[in-house]
Length: 67
Image (cartoon, rainbow, N blue to C red):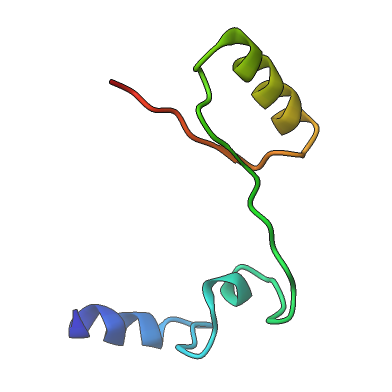
């Protein structure tokens, strides 16, 4: 673990003070929202709504439960 942390801290542009969002290019004050579609594939209607939402940028992730 210590070796991994040491390696990460030596990478260019990596700072322990930066959050993941900051390393991804967001400002520290930016607000981010993850809109997750739960129970994708539970029915045809859920699939249609999820596909529509993802294509229009309203949904950014989805969850599928498998047996």
